[in-house]
Image 1 (tube, helix red, strand yellow):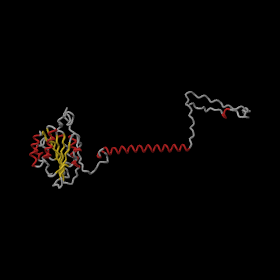
Image 2 (image 1 turned 30 degrees about the horizontal axis):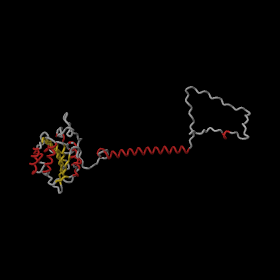
Image 3 (image 1 turned 30 degrees about the vertical axis):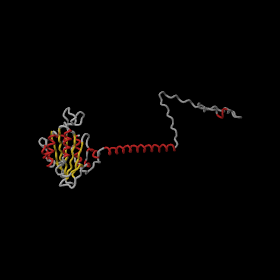
Image 4 (image 1 turned 120 degrees about the horizontal axis):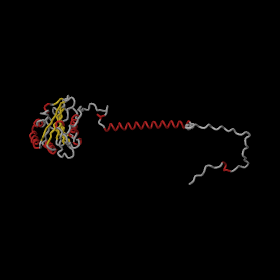
Length: 307
């Protein structure tokens, strides 16, 4: 469809009746002088700014202000979302000013896995069917926290604990069967560490290395079948509130027990970590008034070292 031309003659292009062309003026019109030629390379003339009505200027100021506030709100929303993500995704202790104070956690040194011998695979690497830990077993022990006093009875000779010392952890009537199970299961080494805290809480950690992961699992089952509880905890039961297998590091399993009321002189908590060819036992006792936080923390860190 073609557009109609807008170049139409005035009044339809017809001369009105009685209309005449105006007579020439008595004096010829004054012709303005021609402008001087512009010098070469002169800048193009800048057109005069058009006058803008006051109402339009006011509308533009309002629009610019609205855009600024919109941008500011968007920035604050983005920052708020980032902070919310950080608070929900990171540990509280990782955020300055948000560390939980007075929750009973201990100050452990930086936890670092010991190096592996050259060419040795990790415990749960593909191809390591025996799930064997090639790192020094003594280096896999969790270090004591700040303020702890070392338990010299668990130092052993060159860091290796005699089997008889380990068996004293259990009730006397169970030690014979456990000693035979260790012998049948191909026990290789025992490494241990213990400490006491200023509030009287005592912790003992034992790492038992077997020939294969199958032997380590079988020994833990025999401990359970023999109802071998640790000294000071005559009546215990699995306590999932202290952290069970659902909280274990990948490829490992946790079995946690707590002494039932009424407590004796001390309340005892203990847990096993099944980690390949290594079985860890963590035992902690207090006067019955402390929280379970230090126990869960200690068990979790030892689990991470073995996982």
